[in-house]
Length: 176
Figure 1 (tube, rainbow, N blue to C red):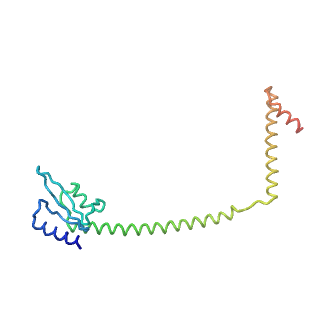
Figure 2 (figure 1 turned 60 degrees about the horizontal axis):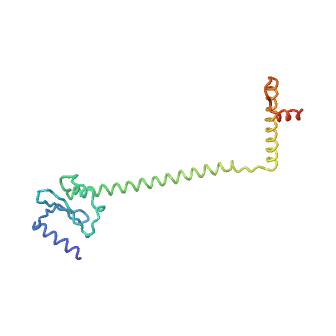
Figure 3 (figure 1 turned 45 degrees about the vertical axis):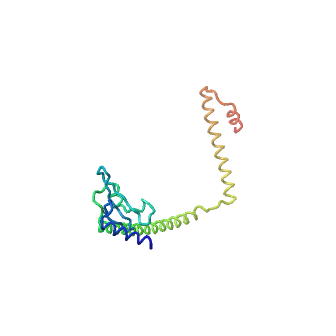
């Protein structure tokens, strides 16, 4: 109640132009904006916060640009309302886009899970004991084939009078 009385009292004082401040306007949060001039004639722009607690983050962008001298003329009430409706439409559109994006992500996750579950059926083939035995014997055959190849290469080198590893030669003779 006191805050409202102070607000209306300042309105009356501003209309009577008793102070050295020139009233420029208010925003939708009821913050009041003023111009004062220094003794040198330099313009200074200021704001009186409605709730008394200065919080520059709560200032509307139009008034913030006017306070920072990025705008020459103070924004009108119509401009402030247009900006507010523009921001509201942006918020609504962003919520719609976020909802569509969430639906797409859910759909992609479902498709991915379906694909993975189909592939898991192929991947979950567990080997039997006989499969493991045949794998080991195949592995031994491959290793033996590699040793035989090494021995064959070693004998060719020996035929060409090149020094051969003795262990390979012994391995070769053990196969004969």
